[in-house]
Image 1 (cartoon, rainbow, N blue to C red):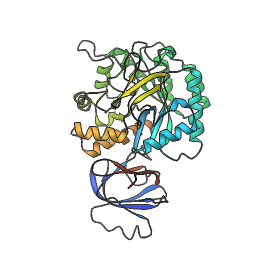
Image 2 (cartoon, rainbow, N blue to C red):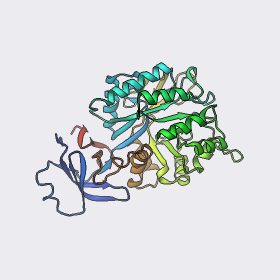
Image 3 (cartoon, one colour):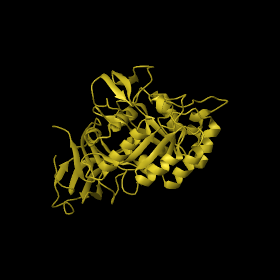
Image 4 (spheres, rainbow, N blue to C red):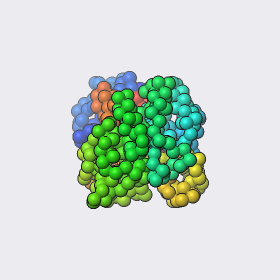
Amino acid sequence: MTVNSSNWIIRNINIVLEDRVATGSVIVQNGKIAQIISGEANDSAAAEELPFIDGQGGFLFPGFIDVHVHGGYGSDFMDASQESYHTITKFHASQGTTGMLATTMTASKEAIEAVLHAVSEYRSNDMPYAILLGVHLEGPFISEKWPGAQNPAYIKTPQLEWMQKWHTKWPELIRQLTLAPEKSGSIETIAWLAEQGINTACGHTDAVYEEVIAAADAGLTQAVHTYNAMRGLHHREPGTLGAVLTDDRIAAELIADGIHVHPAAIRLVLAAKPLDKVILITDAMAAAGMPDGEYSLGGLAVVVKEGEARLREGNALAGSCLTMIGAIRYMHEHTNLPLEQLSRLASGNAAKQLGISDRTGSIACGKHADLVWTDAQLQVKQTWVQGRSVFEASL
């Protein structure tokens, strides 16, 4: 139902709260969650003048937060254009994402700076769809041994002076940096970023166990696309993966698409990590939401076949065609986690990593009405950002 207001009520809905799913109503006023009414309690007095939405017995989730996404619907954040950013945020809003980090590729300094400028400009205006919460720099300070779909021509050792310059020019814009912690200068870079409140993640890395632990001591807090493009687990040298699985300071990103990680390996992460240290991501590239065919990622040719994206040269996986609601559906099918716990993996945990859990990431009174309504089959029917409808499925 179209409601041209930031004041409304949705009834007859299963509300996915942090610790349970409760049937009832949610009242939104001035773009924030004003009241959560469980069970058969009468909400008529509180909502007498509000537009009404019938939730039809579906689910109301907190909006999904994707901290690792490169693009969608034919566009890429590296395009550095407002038109592309509209396309990407509109598409992912249709899949339940309400907040995201514009994720770069390993590229030239000039190309990365173009993205930083474009995202800063985009954020300075009203964002009509999913909100760009900032930028995730995936590289270029990564390992030559584990480039994945990153362009090896632009790989660099960590350049702390670049980070300092960018942070000064675009304060609070960079929210995450992915690097290989074994590279010279990484520890100093991680420590400085931690002082600024910027997440550092290990990824595209050949780091041994001790190097990752040293990075965590310096302030590293995350691992990108766990299992993929990192030194694996060996019983005599636990590697990057062993450190990620056993150090609770490190949050583990997961691409739950049935391509990047076997469901048994997903369950291993869930068994090893505290629940609040697992984060669902899409790592989506421009082909997300588009038909099979040929695309580009970081200037490299990508072939998408049956929804699987791989580099034309070398056949490495090249991002994904996943959406956040798709990740929820996959996890719902292949794990025993209830919806309230899956919601934390798709919303609450990312909000905590970004330091914004006081205002978004869960359904609670006083928080932004960043919400997703799905049917019983977990298909998105409507998405709201701060109470404003940004997507409504056609009837």
